[in-house]
Length: 340
Ligand code: UDP
Image (cartoon, rainbow, N blue to C red; front, side, top):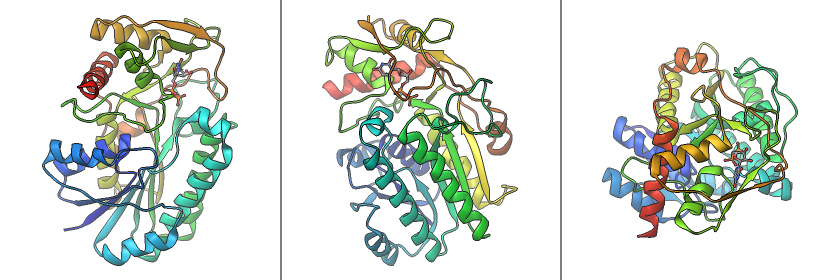
């Protein structure tokens, strides 16, 4: 049985992807995660949902020797899905070193060790933040990248460049860089969802934590943007839809459907939703009322972005299926389960 290594397997998107990989493919799935922003108990939740206990290597990807040791044991690896990275825009603004050091070093190490072990399929978690502030929406993959608005976004821009350089040099290497828009929501069972170790900064966990009473009220960062209601616009997409796209990307690479050994593909729904609209969607879907106050703009935020979905549909035969209300409802079910 061929093995897929998922780095960041206990993380939010990583764990949801592992669940879908187990349920929809015949690969053996192994995780590498040092729980720097996740909980070991996520592995129990994966097991509860799928009935499969995943083996996790608790190592830091900045430690190349430790990765070499994993590959000494794992001899049947066919592909890597590399999620493990720091991902908070505001934290990266406060602590660029943490982001530059971790996100670059870990990518270079896993890439080098993969190549040394003839593992030629590499799926990379990129982000729509690579586009920076864009005037022409929806944004497609041919759009020239603007200045990164945060150190986090910069690590994704450079991460893509690193991978492109490697695919130029190593023709056997196949990379699919998936530019996620805003993954939100939780597994339909309500048994797995977003659970960062640190206080969440992403909108949907902030919303659900406010509704459940962890926060008295929430902030809306900026109501004077040049958008339809003054708040920022994003393309929210259900995490299970994102997870399924990884299976498509793996198939795409392994069955050589890619026309080029370096592919960049947006993963979005194609719909822009403002912060106020997201709040209303949550209230409508759950019947809960949210208390919010308008705060100044948050440093590092882009004004509006949503995806052109043509390429993901054409190349991966994939598209988002869930509505914003479904995303909110699943996130709410998860938040309520966490309280039990
Ligand atoms: N946001 C907000 N209040 C919060 C968290 C986020 O108003 O407590 C806004 C944020 O300014 C942005 C949008 O929600 O406009 C999405 O932010 P998130 O951090 O979820 O994603 P990203 O910034 O990566 O797009």
